[in-house]
Image (cartoon, rainbow, N blue to C red; front, side, top):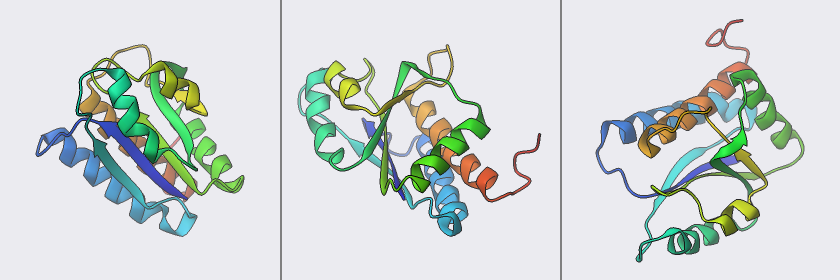
Length: 154
């Protein structure tokens, strides 16, 4: 099952970008034997300002994918529950999961309506650059949990 973290905006060489890429790489390696991955981070930018323009550049990447949008109104999962959710999606035959992280103003309502699920990282608001790294880390953690690694102990 291919996993894409689709984000609005490019981080360039920011420390957060490198951290997210490192965790995506670890998730790919850990998830390979579990049919989780590869994990990629795809950054897009709108040519015009605003959520509607951002929605237009996101939409083509969503076709045929199970879409999980990161949004403050989404469901909060423990790491084990998140791992279990990815496992169920894989076992249900989902071939491609796309996690969405919007721009500074969040995701357009039309994109939120198109998502299969909404995911939140708790009640706090996080910088989008950190949200990428946190999401990539949780995908990596899910792979290690599902693989039985001691990375996550009770």
